[in-house]
Image (cartoon, rainbow, N blue to C red; front, side):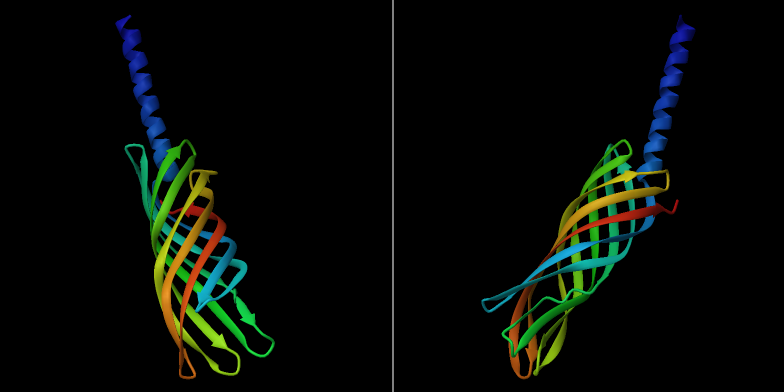
Length: 200
């Protein structure tokens, strides 16, 4: 009987170790990936509000590890897009564009088998261009914040799929065009999907 109990205990320990290794293989380590999705932006200045929307795509690079049942990770991303919200009265057109945006974020999540549910937040940076027809344009680098939630699932030991929503908040930035100044505030919400590939 003692031999049976010892054998059962050994099997349980080995099974637990295998499960832990499988969990590690699913969520731990470095990864790269591609993401794409849809964005809506809101822009305001001196009581004037306008919005834009469109598709975008980009790349992610990150690292994560499960510690005591909680996932901890860091991630960088860079997105390219062609979204130019504008407003006009027939004679003058005001447009705003952010051709790219990058973020540096932390991720905190809960692994459930092959799935990972997470929240994320960090710093966002973009280059914004304000243009007024007939008067000119100005560009400014803008640094703000980003936060969101997401879920991903391991398709294989190295390939995962994800869906997530992010909100970007950018502070007022002053643009100068033809001797005049305008303080612009921007906010953006994106929904995106992606595929990531583990590197180790």
